[in-house]
Amino acid sequence: MRIRHIISATVFAAVYVITGQFVHLIPNPMVPGAIIALNMVVIVIAGILFGPGVGAIVGLAGTAVNGFLTASGNPFEQAAVIPHIIMGIAAGLAARRSVMTGSLTILVGHGLNVYVFLARGLMPADTVFGPLFLSGLLFETVVDVVVVLFAVPLLRPLLKPAQA
Image 1: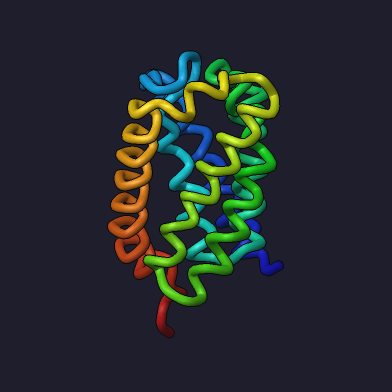
Image 2: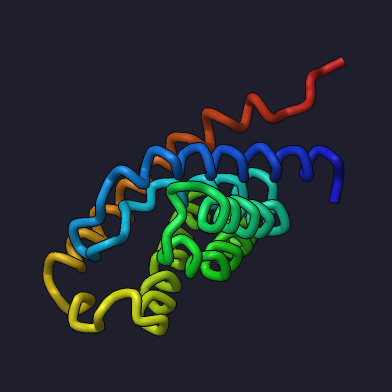
């Protein structure tokens, strides 16, 4: 891994944590005790821009620091570490096809999060089958995809090396 990728992973992990300090104030109406996890887009964007390795590092470092070392950390965030690593890898791999495909890997994160939250008893299974949950998850996914599709083209020119 190049030094540029290590620096980028560090910056994006920090952005994830900083964003987490704000989104933890947005309660999730579908899952009591959880938040609307808009900071997940940071992992997907990092994976798209820098590849699966950086996506995985941002998923690990950003989620672990936010979940275990900040005041906004909660059991949901702590349980999401492995799903976010996988989502970061998936974003980096899928982005080789297109940015749109990469943006849809937010579904990987949401799906794995739901699985882990159910497995750890953080949310009751009957929550998943309610119309509020499904419509809320669809809304959050659409917002996430739109943010990624706007952010990636805006960030790409800033990340290119300067011409000599």
